[in-house]
Length: 104
Picture (cartoon, rainbow, N blue to C red):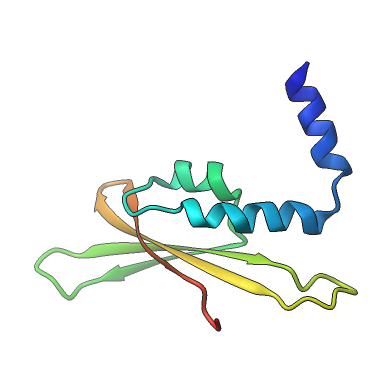
């Protein structure tokens, strides 16, 4: 019953309020978090990118998730972007390596 009430309450909030809440949650990011932990904290990313780095002896991968908040239609607020970089620790094993707010 509580879950249904929370879902209903979230549906009644303006999209901007939900975005602000997710943006505030970004302070909880920590190195070593898994993609599942990040998604639970921030929701689904707006964009994803997968890159291979062949600089070392064995190829390493990098997964990048991009989150965007604000700047919606008719909004006077500017758009804010958070990029979360995951390092590959093995086949299908990603952990947060770094994150940044480009443009700030």
